Length: 111
Length: 115
Image (cartoon, rainbow over all chains, first blue to last red; front, side, top):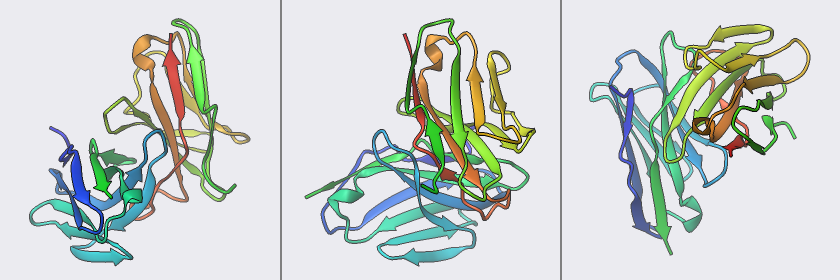
């Protein structure tokens, strides 16, 4: 069973809209979560991290964590064409030494 | 450049040859992680190292793959007798500690192609 599940998409939103990316996880000892953005052929770039239940906002990005329902999401407000990329959700398990990644959701923002 | 440095960016090898991938962590980071990304798939953990020590190699194939992080110099991921299935992007990440709240920062990766 996969530790982290993401909708593979692709997800298309018009410019200026809110993009909603979701991730579910199965392991209850997950400690922290990270959202990375990866442009085609490039390295994953850290966007947000979240450790506690609730919302965390940083500019146009909001990460949401719900440990009871075991999901974490990323909202991108006022989406821009430059936000078009694959977004990777990753979890850090207690006692583990590495991140577990989902397969990513490809987002396209249409001008 | 204070980021994670990987080289080469692209590496082409013929089946049976050896591939050596290098990674220099960010300044001040002593924890190095190697991940492999197959086309259209997520990143899969391979190995976690600190200086001169392999801490966790649970994600690394038992045969042909090895990794090191010497006292001096970059971390090396070595693949012996490469096969077509080794073609992938190999990413290195580093962090200042193993604390779960410390994010890992990634290098630009090495794209390995096996002919």
